[in-house]
Image 1 (cartoon, rainbow, N blue to C red):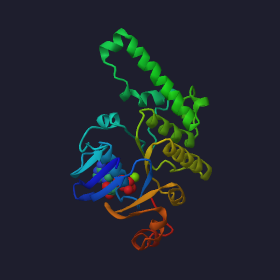
Image 2: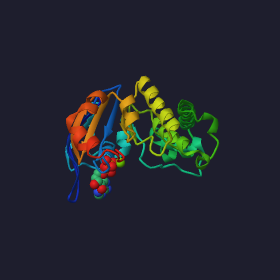
Image 3: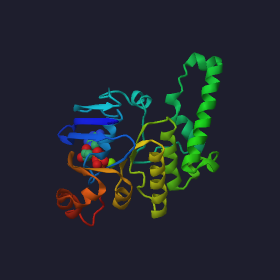
Image 4: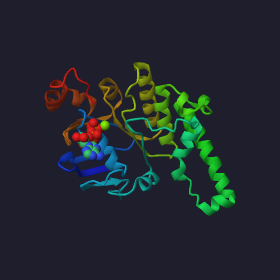
Amino acid sequence: MLLEVNQVQMYFGGIKALDGVDVAIQPGTIHAVIGPNGSGKTTMFNVITGFYKPTSGKIHFNGIDITGEKPHFIVEKGMARTFQTLRLFPHMTVMENVVVGRHTRIRESFWRAAIRSRSTIKEEKGAYEKAEQVLDLVGLIDKRHQLANSLAYGEARLLEIARALASDPQLLLLDEPAAGMNPSETKQVMELVKQLCQKGLTIILVEHDMKAVMAYSDVVTVLDHGKKLAEGTPEEIQHNEHVISAYLGKRRGQQHA
Ligand code: ADP
Ligand code: MG
């Protein structure tokens, strides 16, 4: 398993955002995490990526215990994420937004930068080359010199994925990448996710668009009130009694975020 989440609890005062969750992510898969609003999906991303230290439980990535480690350490180990809401630098170019995301991979001390050693220049060059590569991958290469705030909404979300990819992750966590997108933008982002997976990336996908989740994921984990309600293939989840009654059925007509 690439990632193992064991009995993770994350309490905020009296709120049990995660209440003993076990999830194992197989390499090379698209693993969706679904559940109603407030079920703990984003919190799970936050504890996996080191933004929150879990109240209890363990997280192993590639066999390494990363529980409670800082985000930059976890990025270095090969994990990257996007956020539920856009976090771009609007007045920087598309290219600059990606290069900024890569900074954790540039091992540049102040003094080395000051004297601009050969290796620093090489690393900088590498950062721009990598940025071009990921922008090409997400289809934004022609817009690399534009300001981020000139992008359409769907493009801005793709830029965030490009930025996450710039750190060369093995595991990519996407928090509602298709939120606010129209059907054609959703298809575009989901096709990108599929393509990334075919290139060997493992993806954890939080998404409320059930059609997209069912069409593209290999495994689906369902959270409800901070607990794992069900897990299986899209087919199994769609027919799971607990999911139908506790989630899809009861809340039919509402947005299944
Ligand atoms: P989801 O992403 O599934 O919609 P979240 O993980 O954002 O759900 O939230 C799960 C629960 O944890 C909610 O009740 C939310 O209010 C609570 N929560 C999340 N983050 C915090 C925080 N930083 N402080 C307090 N409560 C939080
Ligand atoms: Mg969320």
